[in-house]
Image (cartoon, rainbow, N blue to C red; front, side, top):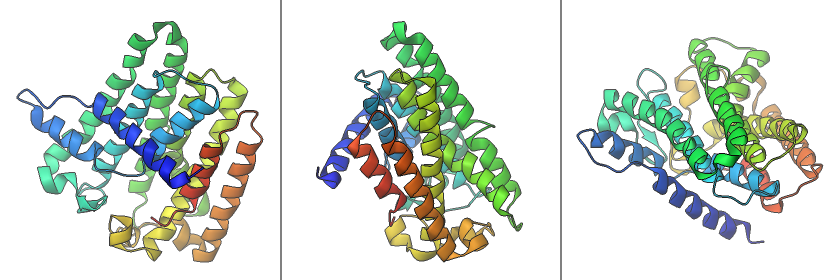
Length: 296
């Protein structure tokens, strides 16, 4: 398997799905649709929808019912980035190599863009009910996962503690809590929804959640490492932003070398657990390895 070629092909497919589910730019409010498109189609790894689709495939899923959930999750991830970049949050001027939403459209419109993407995500996911009403129970379970993992017990909850902790010295327990909710939750969402919609057992869904947590934690620690070792040009966003915002990270807490060792430990455990599932997907295995040890 040529991983890079396969990944490029899959990213193109995902972006076609995203475009299909974007609203038409029309009406007096068309500026918000334009801003939604500006952010959603700004590129990126498409990690979450890809993990969702590959987990769905691994457990035998073959339907297009997964597509509105893939789009919905990427909308939620994108809205979180729009709000992260706001002057009241991280105050970043660039994201994915181009100007952030509040720079292009103004702060008020950036707030509304994030709100619009979040709301439209659930509107999009709900289209699965029309596609396969006979799968309503599984769709409902997937909607529950999407709502909880994106909300106060998931990503938003992690963001709250992150914002409140700015300028404070944090211990490892609090850092792990923040990362578990802020980063791991949406990766868990991706893989759990893929498993649920494919009809995986509750036991397998729990195993997938454990794997996804380890992937998310390693991914975030690697992000901390890149924030101090990479460049703006390579990363596509400002480096040293954590230092600028006086945030405690895994690197500032335990040091560069121990952070690298923790990424390796989590990576090995996640791959081991994935290999021990009854179902297998070689591409998913390779994807996780590449994402954890990425350089950008």
